[in-house]
Image (cartoon, rainbow, N blue to C red):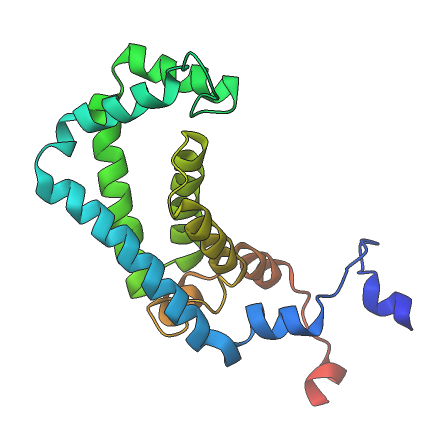
Length: 199
């Protein structure tokens, strides 16, 4: 009996979620908690992006260039801001190519769009992924600040993507757009028998 509930028709082992994870990440019981997390993260990203947009200096790329230069310099004593050599080389390459001129706009608009999407609850899991990706890059470049906390909250929102936007646009967007596994289930579902229809 237990084998039937763990192994699917293809012979793949299905490990069921623990009850607390199912309640927390897959039911709307804690949607209010994800609303609070979402609004907090959204406000942080929106404020960061708006500060860059309204400053008038960020768009030229000079502040980002200065940040990258500080990140790649190796001090005479002590540890460099970037702990991993491959990431330092990556930043150095972008500096040499002058990519800060267009990358600054990418960061600024990315922060604004992630903030707006999280506040509205639109494609929350995707927005949280890109927000967390930016946090990860800031951490890798040696800027700890609040990025560790924001990254952890983004991971939680990604895990709760099905219900994190319940009090938001995802409540309507996700059923409208669907998910890849529901598209497959709809296409591949075998026709029900007459006996099943009567039951």
